[in-house]
Length: 148
Figure 1 (cartoon, rainbow, N blue to C red):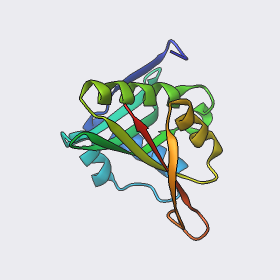
Figure 2: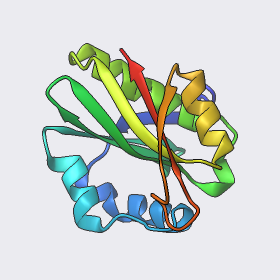
Figure 3: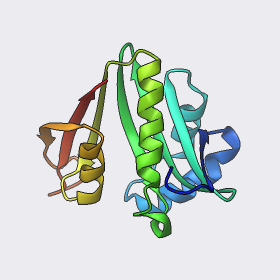
């Protein structure tokens, strides 16, 4: 683990406000609170938070269908980036998915998000396509996948 004070745990409904704050500080089109609530409450979805000294500093959300999973968001608080927290939380999610029988994971990432692409490639994701203008005009999505 990158920091002995970092705890990765399943998100709880009481975490929604903190997750929303992460979203609003990091993402151009943040998710609505109902979508976050669904990530936490739906048995076919996974949501984990990274907690540092009692404060939520990151989260990841994913949805499973049969033996596949799509990672929707992974966010680290701006002042905590570059410390390995996203690596930790992504690793935990991938371990849980593998244990649960998921065989393939998918995600999209903005084409110029170099740190995120590097994170995913470090975890064995490969590029398989591109969605033009997915994040807005001129903001393409790189499609990535990983077999578990």
